[in-house]
Length: 186
Image 1 (cartoon, helix red, strand yellow):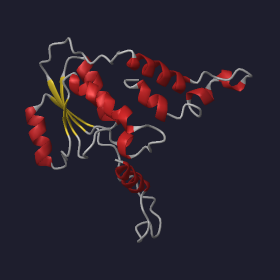
Image 2: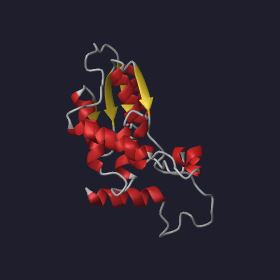
Image 3: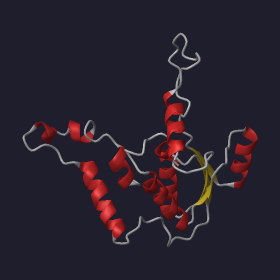
Image 4: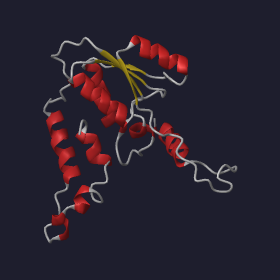
């Protein structure tokens, strides 16, 4: 996991790895991996440790990453660690995508997400907020300027349920509700 202190908070371990563990079905129960991930990382951060982002490598190639959600964040992490210059383009005013605008604060405080981006910026990430890359012309400009382009824009609009009246007045897609609720928190 490129950001265990984040996934340790948001991943449903109890129903996935912990819930599937054969030890979970015994009197001992499974290891609470999410809580352990968070604890170990936060203790290390308190002691001044930071994630490695290839700061010691000579960077010659450059990649554009469109979207700063979990996929873009993971891609940027591995590229930086591998010695690649990364410029990230995010359409919103804050980085993190789903982590920022889709997951409520009671699951993850946004400062945890933003801290990761600060570390990546210190390591060389160039983060462009309010930068919506949505036209063929904009994409071509990136493709011409960079050695590669990674597209990690998520699925904020979701899929249609193909139900009668799903577009009626007063019916809202869950992502619209979550995004608007999170924007009120900032």
